[in-house]
Image (cartoon, rainbow, N blue to C red; front, side, top):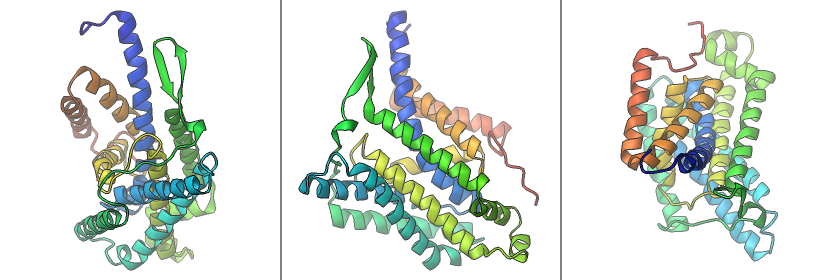
Length: 305
């Protein structure tokens, strides 16, 4: 097949499958935040990729401090927490100062967040320079292990997958096993009734938007373990993230997971046997055909309107 022996094809499928799992983890972390903001609130946040960069630059900044104070092997967990807190705080301010004035005006929201993304990109460029930068990784994130002689699994990829699993479980327990998640779902299903029973829907909106931004910050910190970071890196992932949310079904956690997995694996494997562009085109065409048959996505939420 394609000039390869069956053993080589098997090894390629395993390696590309693992590469797809790493891409799946980053897409899932990005899409979880976007699913909360877009799926639950209906806000098209074009600056979501830049909130990812807030987390990435936080990790880079903390890595420089860690190098200075010789704490490289212990800083990264604190960098993830700091990335979440900073992105959460900025998201909270953005919702309060900008987004809350634009609810039920999707086109205005899209344009406003797109403008915000440009402002944030220029802020990154002015603060950290136009060149891509990398975080200094601790030793326990470096290297790889070999389950067989022909298969090499990088440790940083495994770490990103574990982090994505932890964040996904955290989002699940928040959304479906906590009073905060119950308030969010009640507000989404019937805002007037939720307000009538005493839920502060404006506060719910603010915290929901901030939570989505905070998760994007975690995605950015995780991203620094597998690639370098530049001012426009986040914008490269925003289209794929929206594709994951729309294809999986807005407001569906299971749909987001299934969609991120399918898109990441398809892109990873197809791009090896085709060109990068043709792999993306084939993936996108498949999604378009499926959405024509299921416009609500793979896992449509049952919402009383």
